[in-house]
Image (cartoon, rainbow, N blue to C red; front, side, top):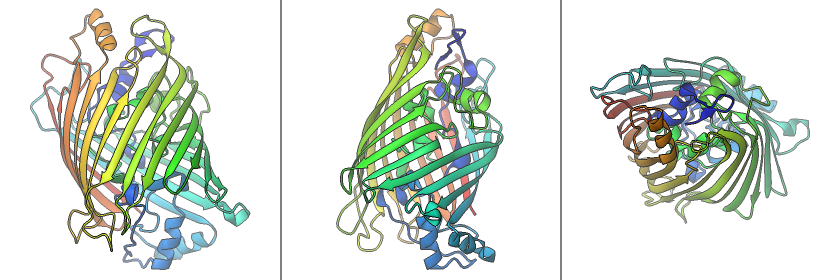
Length: 464
């Protein structure tokens, strides 16, 4: 929740996405399902019927976006393979691409009002859909003498029944330069960047369509941190102490203090503006430990960090402005390894998240999550994923008191959700994720008849 700094008035449109939605999250127009990547660092080729050879698959896989790390989509497993020899020809010249189509649906199954105070305030309150088409490309700058460097460009468009559910219109999702030094001891990324792919990694098992993740799961976003489709100018540097420990520092232009929705739908609809009104610098620092699964070790992913935002957010208490900040801690651990010698990433994982933001400028005060998920739940389905995620968020008392003083129906003090979903790999780079998410208090702004939410959702992602 926030105010428009110039007027001090509550901006309801932006509050929908930042503070009210309980669902699958915004920005799915570039959602990429890489089930085995997040902790294992391993993906195994599945040749398409169009004849992608193992050699070409390995080459394309190495050409994926390097700065995305474990969240990089699998460039070596496209649905159409090397049809017409196009991919192999482009790869010879350092170019690789994926054409990504995503289709998403949300629907509350309970008998609840479809609007709150005249507006839809969460995904699925009434039938909600979002679709996107994205071209993700990379260029190996080694072809012009910069060995190890890479240029990334992603552009696309989207359609939706609710702007908060999915970005509309044409936009640049990413235009970034990557390079590394001292045998990858130091890595840097600069340009228009989606920083949710670079920091924090809230995506359960690499699944960016996990149903339990709405904007409240990303408290850093309400503090101005960049999240797809709100790409912002950024400069990130990572220092790798060894094969596992790292420290990553980033400086980005903050998302507008008016919120992520306002950023991508009005103030910066094509994601090409270097500055937007009221948005200043944001500094983020993350320390982490990443160990991929292997025959000798189970996967571990620990990360903790914080950010500070110099933008002016209207203070619920004083009516003046204050800076914003956030702190976070996440940990995921592989618990079982049924096939350590062959597919070591398979097995059960457990993890938790704790996030904290100041209550005077944010609606979501604290966020807690526990999760358990199984990558490759069946021996003959090594790329599927089953997930169970429980979350609990505390709303800011400062925000509640402000709106009570305005005479609105008293907002809730907290929200709790339980999500179960299953991601099914239909074929090469083709995934369907479906699930149920039950939420007690699905939005901050409430009405007496609103009730609870049992959201059925489906996400279909195909990468050609």
